[in-house]
Structures are given as C-alpha cells and as structure tokens.
Image (cartoon, rainbow, N blue to C red; front, side, top):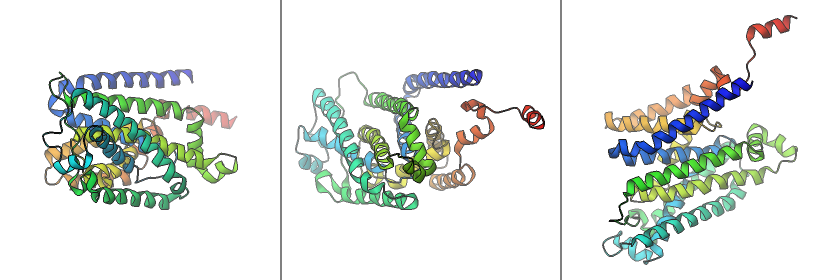
Length: 356
C-alpha cells in the first residue's frame, strides 16, 4: 500500500514540477500566444471553481458565470470610480483624458479585486440561501435563468456602458512591465492559490461533508449534517475565486461585454461545465486536465477549421457528453486504479482466497 501511495505522490510531485516549469517559460517561449496562454489559466480556474459545486457536491450549476461577470464589472468600476466619474468614463468609452498613473492603476486594481471577492461571496450567500434549496434539474434551470437575467440587466444599465460594454483602464506605459506578461502571472498565481486551497479543503471535514451531500443528501441530513450551511459555503468559495478571476480576465480581454464575456452563459457558462466533465468531475485534477484539453482543442479548431469551428466544437461537446461521462481521469481511474491510490487485489489471489 505504501508503495502505491509513494507512486501516487511521486506522480503528483512530478506533475507539479512539470506544470511550474511550463508555466514560467511558456509566455517567453511563445510570446505570440501570451493572451491564449493566459486564457488557458482562466479556463482552468473556472473549471476548478465550478467543480466545487458541480463535481464535489453534485449540484450542476449553469449560473456560476454570474460571479465571473460581477468580478469583471466590479473591478473595472472600482478602477475607474476611484479617480473619475464612471458614467462620464463609459460615455467616452475610456477615451483620452482618462489615463491613470502607475500608482492609481495598481491601487485601483488591488482594491477592485478585493471588493470583487467580497461582493461575490456576499452575493453567493444571499442568493444561495434560497436557490440552494432547489435540487437536481430545478437548481440547474434556476441558475441558468439567473445568469441570463444578469446579462440582460447589465446590457440595459447605462452607467456601466449598457449593451456597448465597458473598457477597463489602460495599463500604464513606460514602467518596464508588459501587461500581457503581468496578467499572465497574476492568473497563474490565482489559479495555483485556488488549486491548493481546494486541495486542502477537500482533504478535510469540508470535503467529506460536500461529498456526503453529493452521495445522498437526505441521509447526510438525517445524520445531523447541516447541509444548507455546507452548500452555501461551497458556493461562496466558488464565487470568491471566480469573482477575482473575472476581475483579472476583464483586464486581460480589454473590453467587457455584458453578454459575450461577462455573463456569457453560452460560452464560459457552458465551457466550465464541459471542461470539468471532460477531465473528470469530482476529481481535483479532472477540471485541470479537462480545461487544458478543451482549450487547446478549441484553439486548434479556430486555427485550422475557421468557418466550421463552431460545428466542430458542437460535435466535440456531444462526444464528450455521450462517450466520456466519467471524463479522462475517471476513465483512467477505472482502468488504472492503483495510480489514484486504490488497492486492487490480485484476481488470482482473490480467487484462491475465496476457494479456501
């Protein structure tokens, strides 16, 4: 057994080292792909945060994208609102005359991310106490409607640019720091913090509680588990990291559209579900593997199947759902359980034991 665990730990440590090296050198080896690489980390982040509720707890949500959008808008509004009138700024779409100094830019960004995290958590707790009372398809439909409603609300809100969207402040020039590289490493750092925080939480009482809710919520409740509290905490944790990620993503994209980026249920909202399923939902590494495979495949479709990329992506989604219900790591765990720390008795020894 110890040999199996050592093998598993060795694989995990080797994986961490390989990812760290790849993360550090990638933006310099492929300078033309820095935005795509940053978006890869965004994909990993949103898949990881969706899996807290959808995979580990068994509540399929199509509304997590609202925290992503709230983070985008909140961070941009704070960045602008600390120094300018937001309404005037959005009317001018961030034209000349609204440039921030280096100190203003970074102080606004830091405060914006902090407030985004707070708003994400508070909002998750407020709506979670009501929405998390729903189960199964009712919860999924409820969250889907909430995401659509937020997109429409912000698309009609003139103060934040309405349907024309909002432009985050320009990155200060002349400071020897490239904006793409800066936001790339910020996203790497956030994703790493998210991953290791979830890893720690899943290994403790919190992980056992939300897994018990997934396996049989009624039985968990009957045994004294305060399921509503744990469900709300799980959604708040997901919202915390997702809101910060949205704040960074808004600056990476350079433009916040209410329907196509902030509250994009048809893209980010669905992709975060697919990536977790593709990699193996309910497994810590599943969303990571799924996000990498999905994002790379999607970029290849956009490069080599231009004009047919959405058809190809749709077919990919169907294949994922129909043929890989357990995901890549789920499929691998069934065939190589020892790699995941499960002890498998030798069939011959087992049969001999049964005979005796």
